[in-house]
Length: 114
Image (spheres, rainbow, N blue to C red):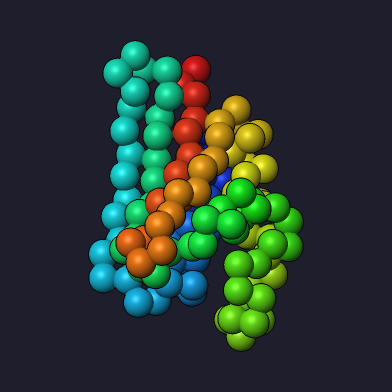
């Protein structure tokens, strides 16, 4: 792996929690190796306000913002998660966003072990 790029992915996920879900009480970083050794799974999990289901399929699109007004206030461009997706795809992995309103968000990625 390009450790600097993977660090960039984790930084983006964590920064998004502080920027868009500052009401969180708990922030977890998870990493696990699949039992067969084929994949590494990493996630950033928060217990913030969550993301509406209608927005989840679009989070990794360029310039997409869940709350357009709030993003302008906090300086977001809508490019961070798109860059994350491309970094992970260049490493042969996948990204996923899971969330439930009022219960938090899980942003995760997988990377193949070669």
